[in-house]
Length: 256
Image 1: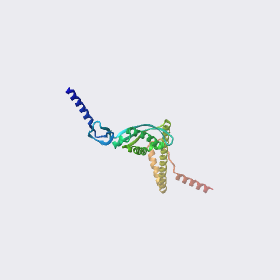
Image 2: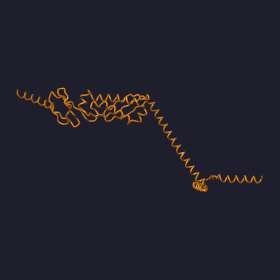
Image 3: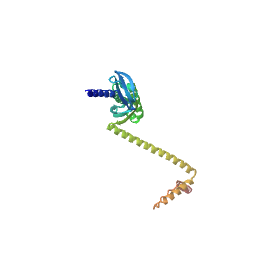
């Protein structure tokens, strides 16, 4: 009869010891309630509890990654898009995270979803596609203000994907193509303008030194003859034609 009694005592003793000793990891904290009253958080390491009086809730202090589900958003310019984002947050006050809100993870996720729809509904589609960093900073600020009373710090919010309707995708592609054509025409026009300026400068130089035109003519002849062409075209200088015309005019005047 004594052995079963001793066995029962040892069993209850081990069970009591198991409930008294808790070991918390470096990234964990234990929020202790004594008879329902919060007495604070402890950890990491070895923690001793009073059996049947103390109750501990483990809290993970590591950064939590939450993938916000795709949200249907109507932008300021009335374009319907689907947007999803990723949220990084961390518990900074374990007591508030357990006492101030029933489920801190669910509360944070709901705040993130509603804030995403609210903020993106106030911007136009072009800003949503071009100003991601500004929108991310605004989302982070608003969500962090909402979760701060719960002892939660939101460190990063990043908009991941923006799914556009097919007709809007085609319109953006046409707009981008038109923009590329416009830039090409502007660059071509600037090149023509610069070339015209250089030709004007060359004409001024040649006007000041007429022999330069003859040297250019001879250089062109050398380049053409190097190609071994069967037919050569000799351009006649305008000055020669003017001299010939003056000669004919003078001859007609003498005859009359």
